[in-house]
Length: 195
Image (cartoon, rainbow, N blue to C red; front, side):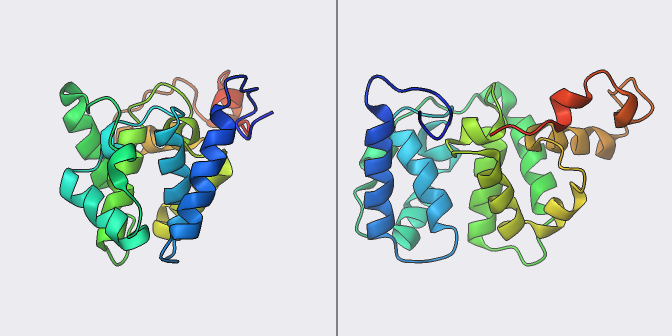
């Protein structure tokens, strides 16, 4: 079984782990390097739903690679679908929401905000779409880079649902029909743990 809980008959899981180990060995040792290595290894081996360059602009992606993996040939991480231009405003709103929870913004925080917002465009759990290996990985990224956002999700709602709920609340849109989460029929869909 792979770390995503799926049996990989085609050897992709082994290739992903090999790319991950190589990236870790070539890492400059900065914080967040492990999370970037996981996402990049997944992107290179066909896991997740991330667009080209993890959703970053070419210059941002080059800066990310130079900072974290300066000796790595980044060309194998460029492939992927293009960002959906019809969802650009949605991505920008998610990015802005995420960045409002950053006390001291840096380039690294901006990269993660862009990548998290791009990951929200996928159709599965955020951790899966990002190419991370578990929900705990997303929580670790958010806790490290956006601790105020992590603190706000004090009931451990699934991250993609939480982010969209925050957008709705910010705009005064209340999409949930139940008066509270505890009495909602979808409670398990929003709060049940996934691996």
